[in-house]
Figure 1: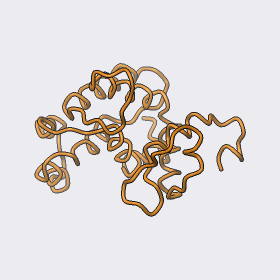
Figure 2: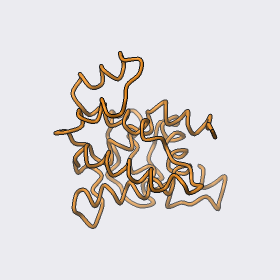
Figure 3: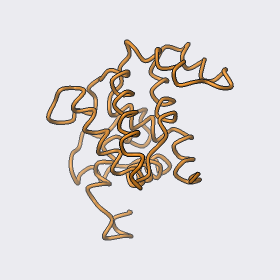
Length: 174
């Protein structure tokens, strides 16, 4: 639909975006189709809207994260289901954000990324995040050891993150 309304919108961005979206009416099941065939699947409109916003708003960041997942998996191609170490992914993303922050491109905050990653940890970590009014990053990073996440799970976490969506729709430029 976006490509029809706005013909110069990058079709490749839409294809990369929908690769990680669950199909409408199916719990976290992504399409087995590839390339342009993905554009003819049915997706939940809210998730599609959120995903397009994230992949478009954070385009450079998402490309770097994609590369990070490939490097962490020691692969030359991205397997969106391959599990990677949470601790390595967080460390890589945190370094990436620090390195890219001076550039004018929009980036999510490292704390918002940690919120997404911590969900993959034991329930004690997620409970600490919910019950403690002020959590320091240093208090939560030890929970990341021994756990894994895939690129698919990371992207789906971004799409469902209220913090990330708020950063996009209500940016704070201070």
